[in-house]
Image (cartoon, rainbow, N blue to C red; front, side, top):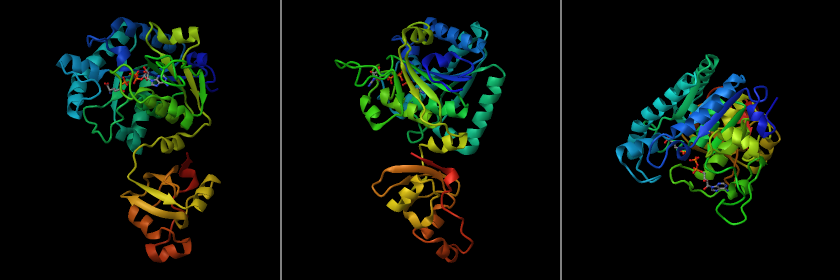
Length: 377
Ligand SMILES: Nc1ncnc2c1ncn2[C@@H]1O[C@H](COP(=O)(O)OP(=O)(O)O)[C@@H](O)[C@H]1O
Ligand SMILES: N[C@@H](CCC(=O)OP(=O)(O)O)C(=O)O
């Protein structure tokens, strides 16, 4: 049974596993301290969920804001990478300590998991992370996840924990994600603008929906703003996971949203298997394929990708990598696991299957991307 309404997030039947993401502005006060009383109220809600039989995974921001205050570093979101990393290193140890202590106050055991984009993109590490989640949740532990900011380079950083929450939800096979933030959902324009209306439900994050988000964070403490939350909603949607943006500012924010009927609920269009979700959720690529119009139509009709339809190969990739597949106008139409490395793919580009043996010097594979390993976008 899948989530269909807001109260379903609190049902062990419909939402056996829940990810709750908490933004920096909620967790850290203006003086740079953890808002302990508020956090205690959230943990009460985590405890209630556990008592109902739901597994809960927390994605907690706040290390940079916490560390910056302790180091006396200012600069909001405009810090250099090394500055942000130093702040994160100082802040994370305090943040994890606060979580462990306050969860323990209510009889819950915390575990820390620091992840990077690379960890979630590389299949074997992704599977290890999934296995660790499964074991921890089986033991009744509450994993607390954050980005491993101290080792992530700019290129491989998520930079915002909204997408990290969606990818974490995939990795731990969650049914729902709650993003607690400082606004009670998605508005049709920036909420500060006159006449802005909240959208209670969104089924399918379209271009029109993306245009509603102003890029900047409102608080000046968080990163990514609504744009990042919509990207997260899109990742969740593709993985068949429901996601809700809720106002985290009051005490007991989840219960409060249920009472007021606030928030925005993003519902998935279709269900995807774990493997397809993993392919569709990939964000970094070692290369790319461009195909002709006929090939785009064939892919949309559910066919595998043949070398004959490929018009361009870029990057240095290996067999087994996930690549984006672009239409002639540059639009990304699909992602899929490639059957050849970049040299062989470039060599057989545009060739029919009959011509490929002589070029490769061995029997060709039936296709370049098999339809079972292809996700249309
Ligand atoms: N269309 C929109 N609807 C709601 N909020 C929006 C919209 N466009 C931009 N925002 C801004 O996004 C902010 C939330 O993002 P952010 O500050 O990054 O939160 P967090 O720190 O919780 O991740 C809101 O406070 C609001 O100022
Ligand atoms: N990993 C960073 C989180 C960055 C981030 O996404 O912040 P936010 O937009 O407040 O959720 C930190 O702990 O400070």
